Image (spheres, rainbow, N blue to C red):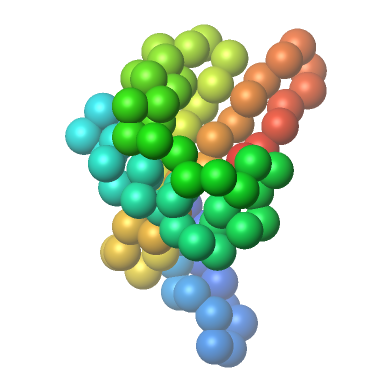
Length: 95
């Protein structure tokens, strides 16, 4: 998969945003992001995610044909993760 990119020309915003396919080596960084207190506070499940649970989810997510996981790169800095779950013609986005 190739990376997807967008640019913003608005004032005060991010200059460029790229989505690159996640790889197994991103697992720990994504776990840290998923356990950020603000992220947990706004999540459907606010409890911290144990590392072992995350690692299983991440490995499975990378091989599922119905899921795509991307690392968000804003102005050259890895900044977050996006997961797309696909079902027929529908999809669900998790940020």
